[in-house]
Length: 239
Image 1 (cartoon, helix red, strand yellow):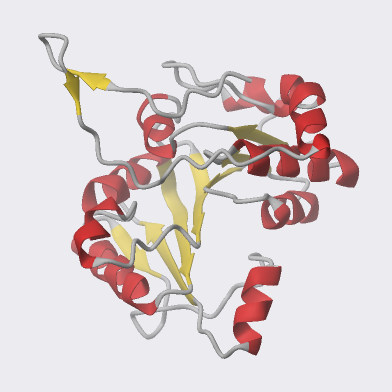
Image 2 (tube, one colour; image 1 turned 180 degrees about the vertical axis):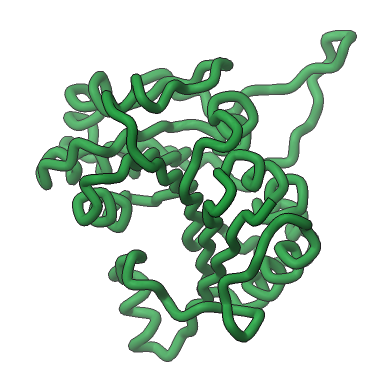
């Protein structure tokens, strides 16, 4: 696995440009199981970054609806969704290699074959590797909310990103977000309302109840016991 998440940008004179990232690269320490998974399962389930559009039919060996998940953490919910929907293809992107290793390990343990994973900057992958009008669903669950006001610009949900996601969705495709930070939920809603070509799937014009398709994580269950809220947003591409 080639893990070069931070790829610098340069101007025409060769000077490196500062690019605002929506994540902090925290590699962490790999467990033996995660290391084993990366060494043995990455060759068949991992996807290296390349500045070329993916051929999903070739990647998965079949034609099927494709769901892209951005920032899958340790991968438990992504593996659960892939296992519950064997008729669909799933591609997950995560910048932290321990999470990628954990996801690969669980996928193999569960016998999941309709899942591929990447370890790279999701924005760069969207820009260069995801074909236009190719995705049925894009999922963004519990992204870093960047609580401090001076860091809000690092939030991944911004108009340019939302526009890019729309271009990758097929007409009728859905962008599904979830957060446990209410100010970020409000920010997401404001941004989504500002971008033309989406239709909110909430009958009340704001948030939707957690759909059964999104597994309840241990983190979320703990939050519920503590009285924490979770906000789901689902917007359909209509043009």
